[in-house]
Picture (cartoon, rainbow, N blue to C red):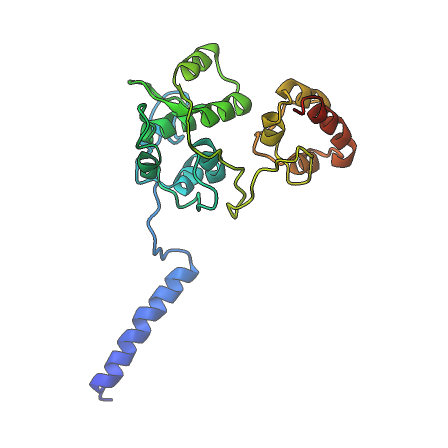
Length: 243
């Protein structure tokens, strides 16, 4: 059998694209690069990802994949504008976002935030600053040491003329409620922002408050609490501190 040049070209194309299709099917074909953080090689955290390896080219999605810190939490902490895709947002873009600030907020800030958020070690070799919202999330979410709290309070940047970030959902478009009414989409962070103390919330829950960015209703469903029964008690606390 003699192959013509046309037949040979068709066979080559079939093999090429057939191979790509098969590789894609078995999960080995990647059209986009992904970042894999270096891990600790010794000590108590051996094998776990090292926050010091976070670079400016990392997206918040890369950080979520490596460190299990939701991209939406990072976006809220660092004031990424509403409507921006937080998963695709790169760490180096913070340089533009905070370019006019006297205190630098950039890659080192993200490294420190991730380390404190996850409880992973990170050596501070220079002054590192965090936005006030990031510090607030860390204080609410993680049990920090007195030394860590002192450091954060001395390295908190109060931002002026910057819109307050919203609680970003997976679609990154849901705004924080301003009517101070506890609803199905209300997060614990919103309740805290309204002035209700963490102690009051935990007293109603009968347990430690979860990640502040968790919706109250979702948490109730997850741990077997009745949201409708707890709602009046939480709303009463909201009403007490209403302006």
